[in-house]
Image: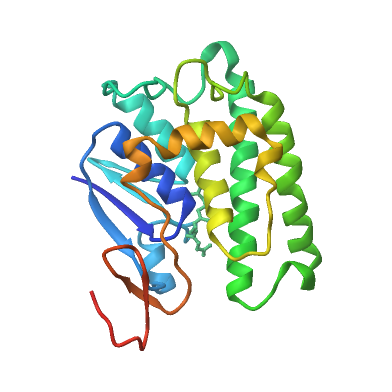
Length: 234
Ligand SMILES: N[C@@H](CCC(=O)N[C@@H](CS)C(=O)NCC(=O)O)C(=O)O
């Protein structure tokens, strides 16, 4: 049995779903469209944060740990070019790869915190911590841009790495949300080109970004959110 518990709009879960598709692994989609109770969440993970993956006897949470597990447990790589990387962190560049990945996740955590607080009615201009979180996005992008080898490569040569995938989902999340943040992506030419290439992969197309905010209870086939009280259902 393989199953993934996730929230519709989560960039962390989107990265895991992209990797599952890259590896051509089937799984049961346990998608949460409404916010579950603490008790329900706690039965899946002590962090109360999803995604959570069940795979045979294994239960894993934390999206990076899940993807590291998937990359190391499943050796088959479909023929898509460039292929998915064989591992999360290369032995010859272990600390560099880990530093890049954790910095990308800090970007994602800052972006999702800003998004969650916006739903709670607190914007970047009203809160010092959120303003600082928004500031760090640009600093991280500048540093990551300098880490990329060239405009035709991701963080690993000739491979699509989990670093590439997580950076793409987090940036597209920020761009798709009305958070009041302009990432000025054209200033980061190598990152912009990397995202364009990833958007063209079937794993990304099969897992589009869907809008979610409190009150969304479903989706029309084209992804348009259905709000509570809309009189629509699907
Ligand atoms: N570090 C976690 C972050 C996951 C995360 O922030 N998940 C969000 C959805 S985007 C969540 O479950 N939020 C609920 C909460 O924080 O209580 C990971 O990488 O999996």
